[in-house]
Image 1 (cartoon, rainbow, N blue to C red):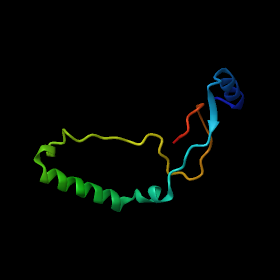
Image 2: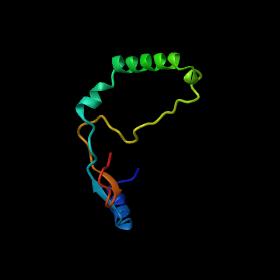
Image 3: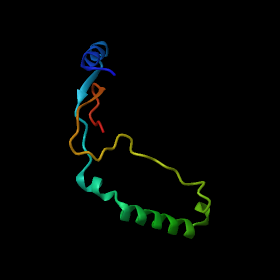
Length: 88
């Protein structure tokens, strides 16, 4: 497992990287992901698919995720490229 000395050496070889504190997810957003809201989402999706037959077989539904979204409010620093403003 890599240790602290490895990290220091890695950062000295990659000068375009820096330690940054990522933006945290809002508490409201983090707590909104629960069983009831997920059920409501899928109920609404079912209603839309029933109303619009072109979506009926699911071939026009695309999945997107929010990469690096965290629900943890106390965040540690991460290694990121210099010049990047928004780190998730």
